[in-house]
Image 1: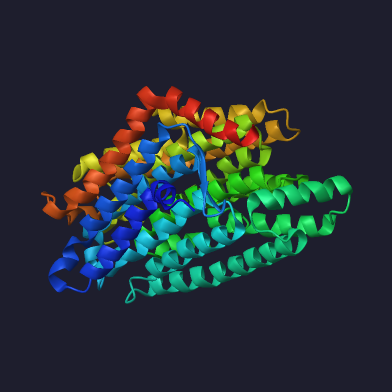
Image 2: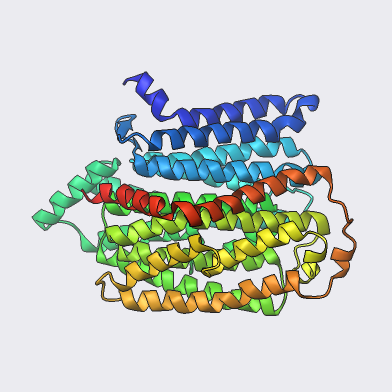
Length: 495
């Protein structure tokens, strides 16, 4: 094993690991605890830049006995994960100060981020499992981190129980795969299954069972219906910095591993049907309950949770069709989704911080006090709606639905129409929330907000505006480049 190559390939992960070690050590010293947010942000930025740098070099390297692949696909999504985590840590630095022992939060979220990054390059079911558990266990801890908050404790327990069930399903699937092929490496499993299929000795009931178990685990991590029931309560009860992490980073990692497994190991008719059903259910349930949430003026975080379920449904349309064109559209929309959803949740985190509330009606008339953040929130909501006012999301969603419609897949047109109708329904709650922020009378909670903003809130504003500016710049100047990059990245799976 060439340790020089390993260190080059895993340089981003080494940066994150260094961040974990240093934030743990600084947590031991009272005078250094306040610097943990900055330390974590710096190492995440370095990890993201290391991935971006490698994107300009056309190479693919497998290491650790072919259990981890450093190709263009993994580098792109690792860069996205570390970049989003950088914005989360940057924005959460002031928000987390209300928690007891906020300094210990950072090594945990860095550990989860490390698991998500490794998932993007996993080429072995054992690496897949270890990385998924690293992501999941850290996420459970930061979900229940506000230990004196009943909602946070409840969210942590719900996430722990449902995660344990999904872990059991994954282990069962891996045990069947190993028992069938005597291998855990994706390439060896694929080769063995191909040989068994040619010989006609592949057990169809067992293959269907493995397909169902793997799809269920991935759907859980995506918070896709019908495995979505945990997400509204967990998103609502967890600290908002955790909510945005689960909504974006966990989804990006889940789609990364889903694309790699289904393109490398196996993809059959049963998987296609299951993903198609998950897509339709996610779009219908996410948008229907999102409308109910807005009518009842419930929690902003619950509203965004159901929005995330619907968005997962749009992405699952492309995954279920599973052509090079549809996967390219998925990858493009996933990048845009990460930026706009991160910006939306950062704005929600800021409004929660200044009003001490997550209720929709408490944000009425917020434009009168915090116009800049309201405009940023409106940009993100308009992007999530897919309106052409913000070109990035409109182009990405159009590309997603048009590839589905023209795919030649028997249900492609139906899926595209369902996605389009779902997007039209979603316009109601996205635009109604903008109307509450801008047009409605000022609420009591907003009236209590001081005219001058506090100095520490500059960090969350900075993180939010970075996300929004990237969204605008990408939409105006970089969509052609990103589309070509996504197409080139996915085409390598089908060579």
